[in-house]
Amino acid sequence: MIKQCAAVFLAASALLFSACGAPADKAAAPAESGAYAVVTDDGGRTVTLEHKPQRIVTTSVSYLAPLYAVGGEVVGRPASKAKVIPEAQNVAEIGPVYQIDVEKIAALKPDLVLIIKGINEKLIDTLDANGIPSIVIDMKSYDDVKRTLTTFATLTGEPDKAKSLVEKMDKEIAEVKAGIPQEKKRVAIIHSTGQGLSVQLDGSIAGSIANMLGWENTASGMAALDKNPDAAPYSMETLVAQNPDIIFVTSMGKEDEIRASMEAMFAESPAWQSVSAVREGRVYYLPQDLFLFSPGIEYPAAVRYMAHLVYP
Image 1: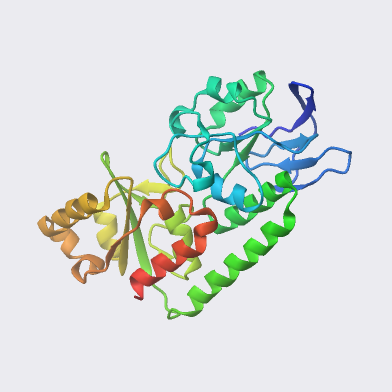
Image 2: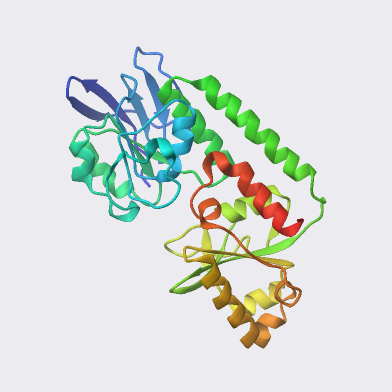
């Protein structure tokens, strides 16, 4: 992606972007030039906000809880049956995540739009053309979540709330890690869809949490799929050779249906039966609200969930 920097000036009912110098490290901070704040987003753009955003639209429901936790709120969000906090249940919808309606965004007269990195960046040019500023957010790993909280707290002017929340999450995760044996586990994370199987890399949510717990992802270092940097092609031959101690399964489908499908596949295949995790019953299914959608401020719950599957 070509790095660019945009300065956003708010005046009456119009907004205008203009280019400036090279972006700094990802950060968010109060502006020193009289503007409200400067944010260097996860797309490498530096955005200067002249005033505190009052009408925020998010293209991800995963951003709702972190934003509201530091004193923010939204006037628009995607249509979703999951992860919509009570405070945002009645907020205007802007279409499904993969089919965001820019006209619906514009109708809400936002002064800031939160964009999902890798999914909604195609909206930026249209938003720019309509004078609507945006910030790109990447929130998969725990470090991503902490950085995002800092960014959101800069937007809301509540840095102490972000600091307290991060300290609380750090403490809870440390307690989980201290409560399990410190032994190296070799894990494989399989993602099941209607199109087939893939394996999750370290950059995925499940891969990130496995690493936090001190376990080795057997797919680490494998070449990623062209359209998904956090997944690699599935190969039965490779999986047998890796012979993981544990297999985690993620899917957007219903867990009982995925479990039945996977277990039928295990039973019918001698190759699967040669894998230790399958043979010894160490295949665990991960809920999508914590391991496919970003857990956000529920990261400690996701870490605890995975740890307790292995060490109940």
